[in-house]
Length: 312
Length: 292
Image (cartoon, rainbow over all chains, first blue to last red; front, side, top):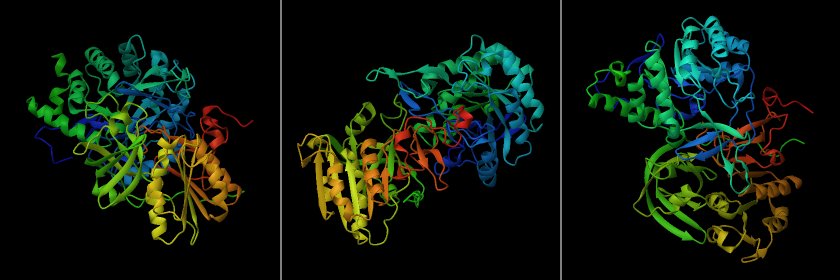
């Protein structure tokens, strides 16, 4: 990853936490990072954003869990994961031993679940901060995700901020499936979010024309990939315009450095690469290199100079 | 009843991602066999493993990798047999010598070694038989007697029969329509050859794997099946290719076909429960599924 480094200063922060690269994995798209070790120097990327962890181990949904769609995919995993005990015993020590920064995504069905998770992660070695997944569409109460309601979203975020390690930046992950994303962004920022992760998947559906039934075991699923990039970019743009002081971790269909550049220009100070990793397991490192070159070619001496440039 | 098989151990080597050249293309009835010049994958590959291809080029709208079993891996060359099932696999079958493809591999867990001295029965359904060619050669070279059964819907869907004939002591062919070999399912031939077998290896569609695994287990013969689940990534990050698998501790988990398979003990796959969420899968309680 260093071979292609240009003179551009790529350092950035997640809230108060400095990171050497603005390119991170995306929650749910790189498991807990270990599988990418053959392909990427995990210590050089911004951070591994973990798959969302909950209090208890979860099996996830029945298969089929995936359908390919034009420039994207629909997934219905259902937050399969080891639970917080498993994460603390296995995945986080593995990352910490290697010096990999972990941005831990937490999820739950009650406000108290989120707070307890934040509490359990206080002071854990290698944990850089928390991404609060209040917007996963693959939960029991589809369409009633916290992030669709500014009050519910604020309740979760304020509880997490109060319970979390003061050194851990808390980012709220927002859903695009809302009428006015700016109002949700403003509410969670006022509730104490140190930053915003935008966007989670969009709720979608695919029907198999042969069986004439929904493809996914979970019926509906989350749409991701380059197909949603313009939607994600629009969300980042609107929120940065309204709340320019709030840091944004941008995501949604980023596949190349030029895609990442669009998010930076729209106001993101870091980006996550998600579904593209399925296509190219080295995508996170490649996007970093391509973004550095793209910034250099446009005369930027640092990433920071380019953040929000399209608004100016 | 305690399982006859241990979970397949991890592969000896981690995978690599490389852009490699297609150096051979051969249409074989309904399939296309591609030969790749991929020395770093060939030297790492073990029978039962697979490779994952990006399809359609760098700006392709088809983002998901196509995972295909390795047929042979020798002298720097990796061969795969591709069935054009959709636009992505069709794109692969259209590759010509001189074209390059982005491939990740070798992936997944290989077939475990057989018990010492055991006669091995290899059973391939459709293009699944290709995944057994490298295994057959390795077993023969290790001094094991090998029998093989290849089955398919029709003659044009059989695969690798010629390669297996050159290695196995006995080769049986079955087709659903009787257009080659005997008319019927692979179990016709499997039932006849099983009494001599000390281990069974199978690759093919799920109903066939189930029938073969059940037949072997009924005779207390260990079996290993390589599943053909659809995968989005092939490397273990997407969590889409899970199956209900009985672990070493006797508990069932949704296990990834790519990193915890594709080779599973035949008596560890809960074939009845594929596509559902049984209450006793680890973590089902958190999904609101309770014991009856």
